[in-house]
Length: 231
Image 1: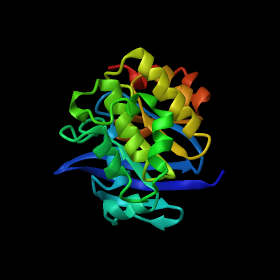
Image 2 (image 1 turned 135 degrees about the horizontal axis):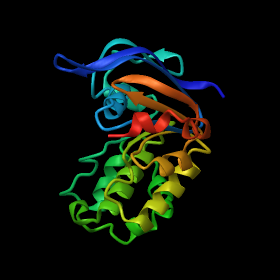
Image 3 (image 1 turned 60 degrees about the vertical axis):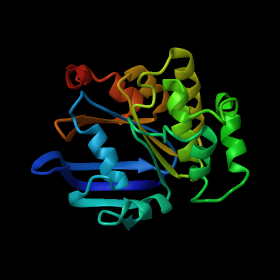
Image 4 (image 1 turned 90 degrees about the vertical axis):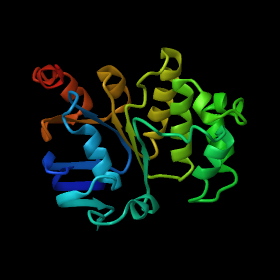
């Protein structure tokens, strides 16, 4: 498959602290990609650099051949990137209905809300409930649903199962696996087996550099993997 997102020699960080070093990776236009690594390896920074929340110090981030490295976040969203951050992913004081309404502002497709509610039927029973009062799993569902309302072609998810009850985890993983048949899905996930279930490809970050990469099962069976995942 063609590369939807291409990253070359990406360096990024915060203040004077560099986190990513010469990162090269390609994301295909369809399928799941897992980004693995221990805490502090640079996984979240990588997602934030792709979506524009963290500026690229050097290197390129190209979407469908267009260099977005210096473009604002809104250009990247309009280009087809959706992002579900690890924290603060919903508007807690607004209802589920209003959170979803915000998600429709980009595409304004009246039928889109019905489609995401069919994917996450639990949300349909909570439309008038404040998002901040939802369970952890329901908030994750809402964040994913809102991102999908923008009709992304590349969906970035940072720890989508963190703090989620096992029954809801299965619903989220099934949703992401199904999505990966149609669009590009990039998942940062601490639970290795869950990440591999979604992913066709995998990258392992170690101290801000790509340490391993390849097919998901190939990376999973690499004897070096646990060395890069151990705390």
